Image (cartoon, rainbow, N blue to C red; front, side, top):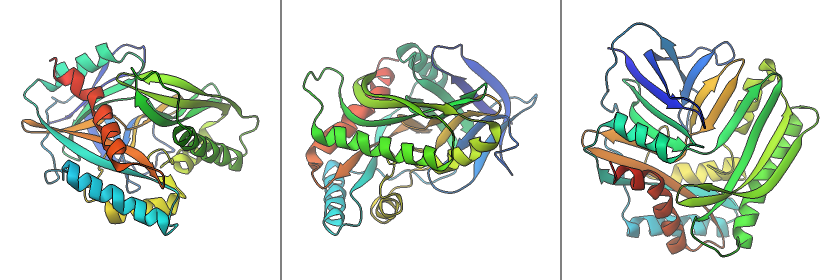
Length: 318
């Protein structure tokens, strides 16, 4: 049996492919749909073929979900590490479990209808199970010799009329500086940037800075590897924050905060945010937020609850 692949790029038509996901030997020579987990260097590429498609059960154990009390304990453990100057920012994620009895394809269609400017997908494979999401964050896009990326950080509810806090602006600037440095290191020529500006993603808003630059196929894989993981999904400094996540987070992020999308002569590759994993009659929503020494764990919990609404609000109306 083949795998399931349905996707919709922002403001485009829905696509559905027949075939299966396979482990790629090289991203540089591949032209097509790819998926990569947060940890590891393995890329799964979709190879089209005439096969019947099927939903696949998860190959992993049931994901670990934190209670609010457990999450606050982990957040405080992050704050203690900041005091030891192991990192200045790190992303703490969690998984929210909800009942799911709907048809996943109806869920995909509803996400497309509700979030026309997001990248929406439904994938299912024996390699990683069934996932569905609607992400706003471009890692790399490329067409006709020009590339784009973005720094997306800082979160507040869409109906919140107060100004962005200094913490949120600092968080966004941190990601912007990191991406700017990586682009300069690759000698991509003139780099233009625009932002930060406020953008809406369903029930939440973010601060975003856009980058434009020259980019060819040869440099593309270098750029992808240089940018992922970004501080927006890992932290600063990168190695120290990654170690904190590895030591303190109990769950496996799997495809969450990994990469997903299309690569080739024309590329649209996204960071896999606002995503969920479907296992039997349960849906596991993956959400996270950036912590610094000034973070309030209670506020960070509320932020993850607000981010979960991106998918949860749609699911509840199926």
